[in-house]
Image 1: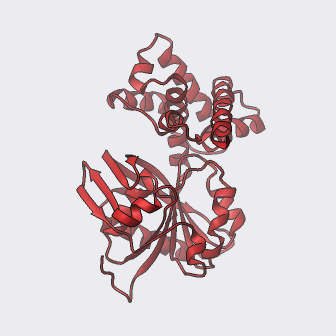
Image 2 (image 1 turned 60 degrees about the horizontal axis):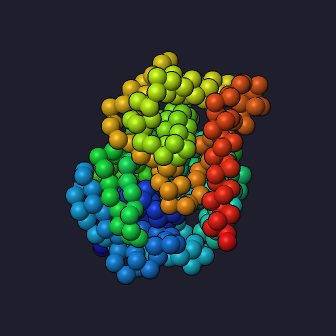
Image 3 (image 1 turned 120 degrees about the vertical axis):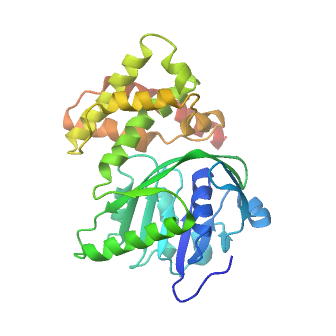
Length: 328
């Protein structure tokens, strides 16, 4: 893809799984973007064949990013206006260390990950940067390296994780607006929020239930909800535990959210989750940012979360088994 030069926007996408590949596809459709992607397990396939996307919303496309690299150190010293982080949050602090060579004082980091508390490691490591926090409602899978299937689900929720040290809210707002202009040009749907944290917590309430339960039971959501008369009440009680923690953290959560999320899931039919897919494939699961943070915040606040804690302890044990097998 040819790009203009005077108003080019240099973007590094870090984490080229299914979701990362989808956003690479969107950003690549914007003529202003000069796109560099960090590919690890799928590096050889993407370098040779590009990225193939089969989308129910956008059709079938194969494209080549401007640069495909194995690690940020391959382009050390390069300036990037935006670093879009779509890597799995298995190790929130350790996973971002490789970005050191490409983060400078004018970099904006876009965090598009599951979980809550994801922004904190970025702020701790690079106190001066602008952070855009995003909630991803995109259905995508990568059945083969560099080959992505995208369902109808496509919505990104964005907002600033304010940097109090900058004392320049207008600068951060302009960086958010520039990034959303890239998504507009790429043809994807998004919404911006003055406070993104209620949206992040709503997604984690959704993920705590469906990701954790499907990973443990190996059932899709519909099968789980119809498995016994106790399934729906249990799910509602589990969600309400996480809602109580969110409210304890002064996050505004709308009334009746648990029932709304259960009703939404019931309308989706067969729903299998990323955590379920990770366990099936013998990959590490995102336990800490989805379940661990709410569990630990609940403990700090003195809020009882017995159902949440039970799921957390069981999934930590399964994750340890997965990691031990991969190490051997």
